Length: 87
Length: 542
Image (spheres, chains in turn yellow, blue):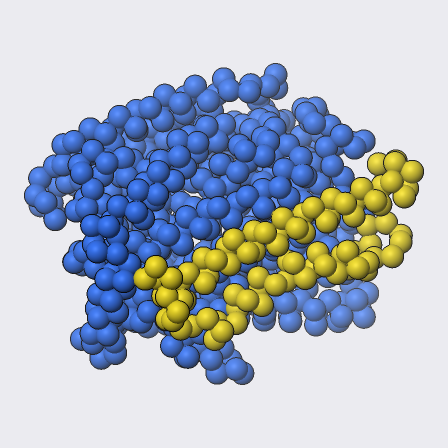
């Protein structure tokens, strides 16, 4: 994700690590099918397998939103550090 | 299935259809720009769409009528395995968050209209660009054909189109009319037409899903009953295979398939030309990032929709053709007028993506085949003219496809299309982040992936089909059953990396890269990235 330095300064910052984690988490959760391939506990009659994945729609949305906000902050900090110039 | 025509449902359907037809033609005047005879205007809506229009456009584009019919149909047929569409669409958004803004920026800087434009500019290779363009067109054509299959399913259930013994012309007339109208307003309004109609489509879809997911379970005695009945149905032995029909959760052996299908499809989705067309029509980089946080609403809708497959089983819907399961469920459960609304939602849901797909395929042809190989000196006005004509041709081709060939052919090709389009990933996404790959290595990797994917898919048999019976096969070296597209993709990457080392070692000539690192992070308002592109930059910037 961050292997292309957009400007010549530290590329891996704690904030960017958090961003990367937010974006990677859904992959780990969804591709590990064994962790949710069961029917119980059911939620309003819907087996676990189905409601769990639908819950992840919401979780991954929240994570992407966090990543977006952090990324905005990261970019703002960067352009401020460069004296506000856009290039 | 009720006999005869469902008059009330048909009337409601026609009413909505007329309304969107009027909108489609009026769209030409919506947010009109001065230089309407450029590909930026006709093919990308002037690159002017904000967050909400982009949201509707992308949603209308990615979640097609075929999706609405096919996903619950897969659940209806086999249960859990069909639900992979949900993790698939979950994974799409974190993925595109990382690379689409870069594509938007570099495309805006250099006036790229298609992904092939970018690949040519980045790697200085017309051959590689042609490979990407051809893959895109090939993958899109059957997809358009499937939209027609979606409309046909709805018309069938409404009783229009007649039985097997009606004259073929009468039978296909409604479809011909629908497509004639679609072709006409796409021709005159370009991308603005589907953008405007997408509002109607998605509003209808959301209403129908909301009602279906509350109303139908109440009528069927709640989700407990629905899943109990579905579980019983799945445990019955299928006489064709001697195995149970399906399951409520994927068995141990099916989990690799489930995961690889989800991942492979997620990687492939934004390689499709129509996804990129909708993306590039947005007016800023921020619009795209913001959209990755609101588009998942559609995934939630898709998940709910998938559950309708179980409801169809519980409601005792018996259809030979699984595609008809959901339209038939609506017809059985809803009052006639609301069934009409639901059918209109599916029908219009076919028109929006079909329009965008034909525009995207036409742009690819015009920019990367016509302009690069046939008429290098074409003006923006000529480009637009060619694109409009090709968009018509593409639709006629899709129509001929559906009317003359068996439906399974379109489905087989769409399956292949997904495998093929994934093979353009290394050139496109790789190219967005690094210039390390060698253009010839990318071309060789692409070729290997295409050949492996096609051969492997050809060799998959199912109880009903000798070839193209599915999209999963044993992964060589691992032994699990996985998505062929993803296996081909891994092969593709390995070949690309190895050959890049070799070609760099022998100092094979590298193409000229016309992009600069800062092009990839530019946003609207930066120098060289005007909000409105002047006509000169749209066609002559390379």
